Amino acid sequence: MLDLETPEGAAVLEDLIARSDILIENLKPGALAKRGFSTEDIARINPRLIYCAVSGFGTDTIYSGRPAYDTVIQAMSGFMDLTRAGDVPVKSGISSADLMGAEMAVVAILAAVEARDQTGLGQAIELSMQDVGCWLTMPLWNGDESAPRPTAVRAADGFVVVEDDGPGVGSNQNDPIAPARASELSREELTKALCDAGRRAAPVLSAAETVASDQTRSRGLVFHAKDAGGEEWPLLASPLRLKGTPPVVRRLMGPLGSDGPAILAELKGSERAIETAAT
Image (tube, rainbow, N blue to C red; front, side, top):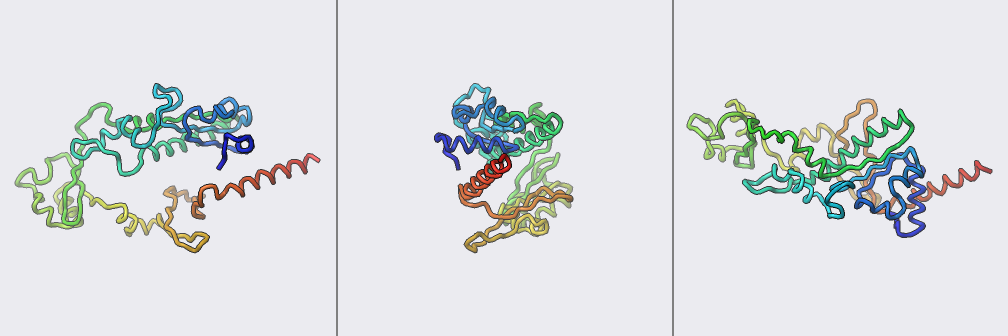
């Protein structure tokens, strides 16, 4: 944690920028520039640095200064209009705009790293979460209504999602699964019956059911680790399965600011090493 309103905090950030490969921030646009760290200042401090700024609406925007968080972005990007409960637009169950903004930032940064390998220079990246949310709605821009629409069918223990090009479940007397009958079947039974009838169907699992499922366990996606006090916590492994260099989650995330002393000690140690080499 750094207080950039103080000379000491600003000096540490400048030191970090000078020694780093990548700077990622999601402050309000212009927040760093006001404190002496504009895009030009950062490039002067470290020409090889890749600087990625993620914000709700970007820097060049008519919404300058407008607060942005996940729900606002989902609403103003068209994303929420596609996620409805009946006729009412609703926010997705997870913070989709936040998550996809971060994912796109990774892709952009990797592209900038590749460019730096060729040119020796870093660059600034300006990423708008609204741009990303709008981009995600792209498959429906042409107004095509021919794509199959998923339908949630109530079973005895939850829901099954059905997707096909034909009429809805139970819409005619020849349909083997009428709503009254479907509600008497388990999700597993209903899914099998629908698939046997030529429909594309799958059970709707809760997040807790997915975490506890045999599939998740077989993939090793969830594991447990102990913190310094001996308390055990569930952790998510990386879904990126690189065979040659598999990513490994090695520790729990510490309390806010817990890595500060180690980072400052490393910076000071580097300063001493540089001074010793100079003498």
